[in-house]
Image (cartoon, rainbow, N blue to C red):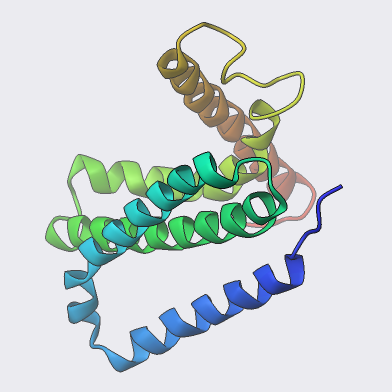
Length: 169
C-alpha cells in the first residue's frame, strides 16, 4: 500500500559506498582508524533521528518509505565501519588474545549466521518478543539459537563439501 522509493534507496546506497571507497583511497589507512569514533557518532545521530522523527511522522509514507530506510542504511554502514576499525585495532595489538580467537571463530560462521538468523526474527519461529516477557532474555536466546543453528549449518555444508564436492575447505 505504501509508495516505495527502492530505486532512490539503491542509488543513495551506491553513493554512500562510493563515498566511503573514495574516502579510503584519499586518506591513509592509519588515519581512518582515528575516525572510528566519527562513525559511531553518525550511527547514534541516525538512530536518534529515526526515533525522534517517528513521533512526528509515524505511519506516514514519508516515515515508512524515506526516513526508515535512509536512517537504517546510514546506521548500518556507520556501525559496520566502527566495528571494523574497533576489531582491527584489537587484532593489530595481539593476534593470540581471546577476543581475536573469538572473532576468527565467528568469522568462519558469518555467512551461516546470515543465512540462519532471519527465521528466528519473524514468523512462527520468532524468538524475540514471543518466548519470555523479558526482551533481554529473548535477545540472548536469539543469539544462542542462531549460533547453534549456524554451527549445525556450517558442519552440514562442510560435510557436503567433503563428501560430494571433494572440496578441501
